[in-house]
Image (cartoon, rainbow, N blue to C red; front, side, top):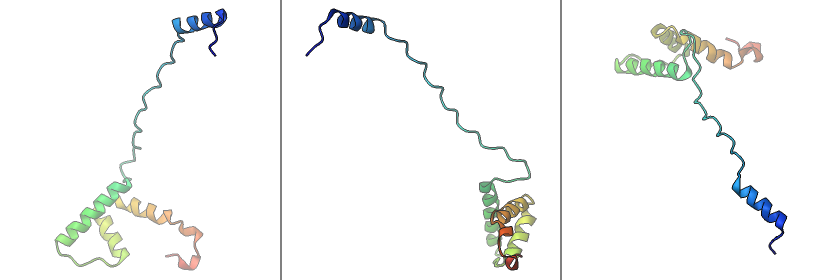
Length: 105
């Protein structure tokens, strides 16, 4: 059944002749800016890039294989001092102070 009343027809005519203004479109999202780090701190990806390059050169020069973490740590810090902060952060991320004191290094 179709509503044919005069009031409905007038309402329909007014509604179609003067549409409500549309809301403005939402602002376009801006891409997030990467955090800026102090120059002495490396991003994780940059630290891995440096470590990978050092290991590649070490292997290419046919130097002995590095088995000890202490030796690895010394070699890496010797190649780039900024890696010291990377290794410190890696160590502290393991939450060493919540571990058994007998297992501390």
